[in-house]
Structure formats: structure tokens, C-alpha cells
Image 1: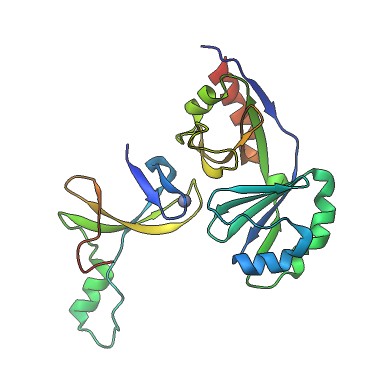
Image 2: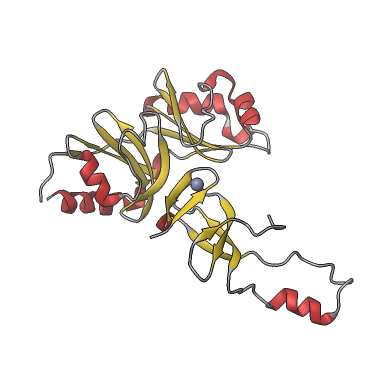
Length: 165
Length: 85
Ligand SMILES: [Zn+2]
């Protein structure tokens, strides 16, 4: 069975893991980040900086790699108060984009979540499984984007090629 | 396949979760109970025929730890029995 999809292994982006109470993280981040999304498993985006609310008191922010140093300089991870945690995780995750008419079909092989757009909305983001691995899944233009731990990236790329061959 | 409701994410496939064992008894004050009661607390795991409270970890999800009640006769996730939380 072949599928009408394009699989792209995306380049690295700036990623920071943010943990702590909403008020404490917001206060420390100040205007370095857009306002944090409050609804579980939702995301916001402003001026190319995205924020994903992926767990209780837990967010990930993503931005173009060129902004990594500037964001780090503003978030000051090593100086943050003890009740919050900010860690640069840019090189820990690899993103894949599955786009095209059959993107949903391919994702249904890999992922147990219902990713139909009536259920998994444009602003949805969530950790779930992709080929049995913990993966961060969200919608992108014309398809689905997901990230796995970077050490699994070659294997997942191979799975995707086999699943769509 | 079983769906488990995570307090953060809502209903998800059981494969995203890891079972964390039954919720044990509340730790008694070792100075206020008999040796038999203390040994029972340390060694006896709840294993009822019926509803049991279990810990689950949304490991391939949001990372939340929570507990549910599951009926060991039917495998169904059930409401907490009256008088429990
Ligand atoms: Zn969850």
C-alpha cells in the first residue's frame, strides 16, 4: 500500500522546557515569551515563538534556531528561582512533518490518538505514542508534525519509509 | 484495549500508560500499632475480588501520576466505592 504523503525530517529548532506554576513561570519569563497557554494540550504562537502546554505545570517553547541564544539570554535558565525549571532542550528532539492527503492514514498506523481535525484541533498538541515511542504530536500545514527523542530519529524515519512504501 | 482517563489529557489508549501497582494502605504510626499490624502494612498488597484502587503513570503522555478504581472481576474502570476517594 502506498500513500500520498511527503515526509520531511525537520531541522533543529530552539526548544526550552519550562516547569513550574503558571504565575511563577510567566513572571520569570516576562515579555521574553508570549502568554502561556492554559488549556491542557493546547498551544499558542506569537511572532514565531510557540508555546505548548504539555503537562501539569509544564510547557515547551519552540522558536527558530537563530533565536536560541537570544531567548536563552532572556530566560536566564541558570539564574531562575528554585520553584521553576528552565532547560534548553533544542538538541534532544527531532521533528518530522507528514503532509499530504494521506497524512492522517499514515499517522493512524503509528499513533493511537484520534487525530481527525474535529477532535484534534488546530491548536492541539500532546504527548502520545508514535510507533510505540513517546512523541509530541501536533497539527501543521496540510498534515501532522511530531517529535521523538533525537536518538530514535533514524529508526523512526526508517519506520515511516517502510509504513508508506 | 482499555481507555484510561488521565486527569490532564482526558481519555487515552492504555498503551500510553504504565501501571504503578495498587494504592497501599495509609502509613500507620509504627509506634502506635502492633508488630502484626506493622508487618501487614509493609508486606500485604491489596488484592480484592472487586474494586481496587490503582496508581497509573501517563508515561507516554503528560507524565501525570494518578489513581483509578478498577474492578478485578470485569477489568472495568469504576467509580470509587462509597466512603473512599
Ligand atoms: Zn496525561
